[in-house]
Length: 79
Image (cartoon, rainbow, N blue to C red):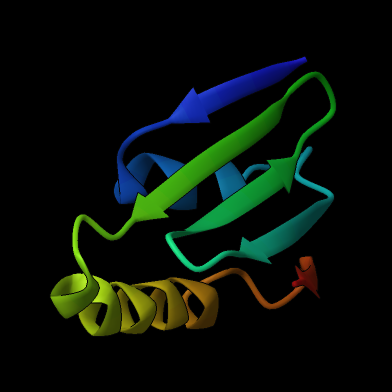
């Protein structure tokens, strides 16, 4: 059952939980989705670009978020 997370800090806390198994990163032209699989729910964080000029900063934000994920977590990137 999916749940959406709106804050990056809340997503990182969810990814650090004991029952978090893996993270999938889906990249589109207009957004980047981070999905963390926990025992009960699949939590999703969406980083959207409101216009093409902000796309670079959002890609940088997504890359920083990817680097700050816990090291023991399995990370899979999907296109």
